[in-house]
Image: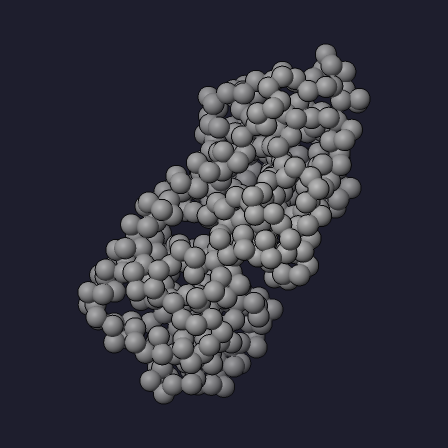
Length: 416
């Protein structure tokens, strides 16, 4: 704690607040503020995309993160972003009050409906010009998480779904389609450069990789059932990188089934492991998007995904990857057997097609352009909003919106 206080002795007055090195630049005040509220500080897909989005739009927006202490918020701070920490709704309200007093207009982005409701309620008092955005990355409990989105129906909130699959789920749970923007997840160009690339194929698939938390929703049980159902797959090597509640149980199942599936647990620098595989298997049928699928495609590794879920919306069977019937271990086994004897030319063509998709339709530029539009200031509030009852008008910050801020860095760490 003493070290933390010494590091931030020159920061603003607030507790639980840190400023990155770039934020002392006076040009920061010219950038339109985006308050990005994270419900988790782990480096999973939601948090990685929040940091990547902020890193990809450094000249357009001044992103201020709010979230619990952890790898994601520490990474944001390391990259030079302003970070406010909270661990309860009460603390979040305290942080937002201070930021609402500082800024007259802003966009508030949240990853939970509850956080959007807090910001909306607080603005009844502060009367700021706020665009509200709720980014939906998926759910482990559909009824609870997607159902909660309906709480925001009465309010002017834009919803971002990271795939067409997520949009359809939101509509299923009562969200009006016209309020949902689909903005795909992406990989920044500098991140792609850090991913080790696989060489060209000379034969069929010999070994595969899976990346994901070892939890039931990821359906690694389907993978184990598939390889144990066919003698031809008894020696098919699959490495599973990821940790979670079911890690020990899955290891026991793999050993008992005498398969060549190895559950490695947490793996550092997973982006360096793709090049060692011939195939990425992604068995989760409820994945909202699947960043690991994009990473494998960028590495030149063919992907095999369930035909339901986020990855199925951007992987075209036989063109940019392969699919199997979700939840069906027998169909997964059939596809694996086919790929073991697949023509090397076919595999190389699929890998090339996938790489082109990453550079065009699935590029960072395409998604960042959409985020820039979604996060833009409310057009109907060109003038200065009414002053807060807590802050005198003379103390209100000037309304200046520019695009001349310095960059905030771009690399995003990660864990699996």
